[in-house]
Image (cartoon, rainbow, N blue to C red; front, side, top):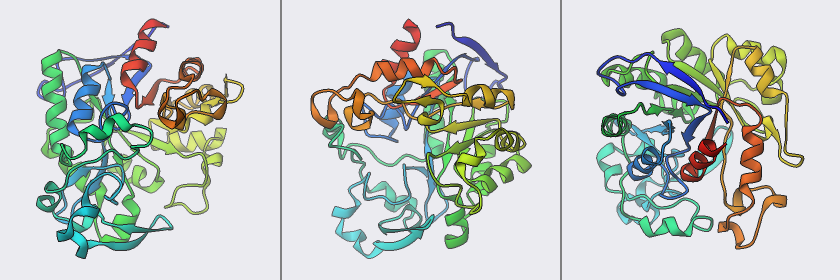
Length: 344
């Protein structure tokens, strides 16, 4: 496969020496999360060392309005908070995006309190090797992730991009009075990150992206789930957003889409759909999610021996995904995907 070079203008002091990327982009989904607990500095650093072009931090917010990195604002799935008696009084039940959720939530903790927690592997049944790192890492702030990206970029002499996702911004605004758009734009300004830097901001919500489009020139990506619709647009369905008209409407406020992998590839026939070509016709980049190698994440026809944690016939899926012509791919398994892309 010939990787097309993509050049981004960079301020001298920001991300890296030169922002030259070859497409398809390798986007480390929550870091090298196939080899380290997700959303840790260790996972991000390993992803960069393995050759990822971009790393993806999911952003939530603390009680004292600090942006930190977790897959969800509920913390019990990825930290040891449930075993910490000193935080039992912070256990809550909340309705988030229409779902009742019980647990401990980042927005109820100060940053200092969060710093006392330790990260654990979220899917230990699928990635038992990652559980050996349980208890070693703290929850990083977004600022620390940016610092790491800059340091690793200088060390390796190449650009490293950031691909943050805003998690549940409408819930946080309506239920907690926390405006993640304001927080993110202020943080990016304070960190000296500008619109020409290698940065994509993604969200499943429409209104959040439209506000970002009105207030900034950062590249924006509309995430598309396999079912349902954006929580902030109850009359809108993701399936309708993938129509020709829907893609044109997305292009009015975003630069790309992040669809579920099944939207760009029929995982039974391994044939690409028309979505990539239709999105390109609307002027949108396409970055589907997520390429993984473990049986627990693969279609049943591609699963092999070894239970959920065993490697299935993932290369068949990944090669078919590459044939769809998308511009970049989210992957948990950076090592293997970089090897595949470089070999094609």
